[in-house]
Amino acid sequence: MPESNKTEQATPKRRNKAREQGQIARSRELSSTLALVAVVSVGILIAPTAIKYWTVLYRETLYMAATSNLEMNGPLLFWPSVEVMRWIAPILLSALVVSLLSGFAQGGFNIAPQALSLKFERFSPASKLGQIFSPVGLGNLAKSLLPFAAIIWVAYGTMRDHWEALVFSCSLGLRQLANLIGSMMLEVGWKAVLILLVWGVVDYLLLRRKMSGDLKMTKQEMKDEFKETDGNPVIKQRVRQIQRSMRKAQSLKAAATATVVITNPTHFAVALRYEAEMAAPIVVAKGKDLLAQKIKALARDSGIMTIENKPLAQALYKTVEVGDSIPGKLYQAVAEILVIVYKAQAEVRQREAARRSRNASGQQSAPAKPPMKLQAGAAS
Image 1: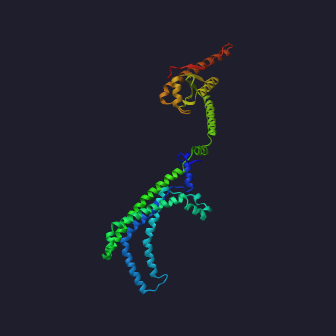
Image 2: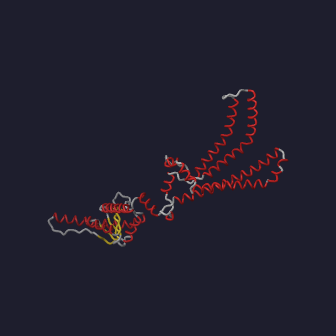
Image 3: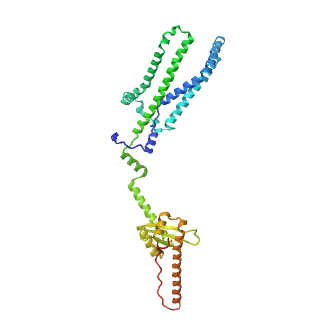
């Protein structure tokens, strides 16, 4: 696939996969420079005290060498070793800590088992030579020579600035000569460290940019990853259709327990259920268009009263979810609907009672028709 097609930024999954393979933007130059700065800083801090202790150590060592025998476990080897470790340990420890912290700051803590796996091509001399003399290897070599060349230029400039003092240094005393050379070394040192720090930051930014470009994806790769992560869109659409069908079936089943169905009358249908022990009526089913027609048909078949109230039906459909109680602002409108329902149910019960009474006395009576649909446009 041509690189020009990789126009999309890497997804989190792609980045995590790269981390598992050990592909993290970490600049060795930056870590090495920070470790060098830590070593120099610790050395400068302990130098005044170290001079005193090393002077005493040399004097005592010469004295012990003249008065005692040279043995493996003797004081002549033991105490110098202790003093060496005493002064070297802080320097090494500071370099280790700063190097670890700089690496953690650049890429965080990461364990990449795939990067540690055994690969025999790594031990091939031909492969290593190919990497060294490849365009990438030569580019890295040239890149590493840039700060070295800058340090050489700084050293040359320092010697040029002090050239007159160096020419006449033969007439200086030992202490003055040491001060001159020390000041020159200090100037070259701090300038070299500054160059390495700037170069380390630049190298880290270049590495991040390169890795971001290497991890870019094509649109087809984005689609393939989306399919792997979230599944095939066709299958997901089919699953959503099945879920909608199940929700519709559940809504129709719950609508059979409703007390009243409030309609738009054509677009919306909301089934409410209310019992004496309830704090407020609840919405047991609601639907729009085709589902609304099914709810109304179920209400007709089940003998549930259907009342048309456009504002109330729209308000209930848009603001109340299935299974929730109606809000307080709709209490009055729903209460008026329930009053109509209870009055209609009471009239039906009275006609049924009168019909049963006439049947019991042998009189013929026409069957009572339950009200199936009422207008309640004023109940809002």
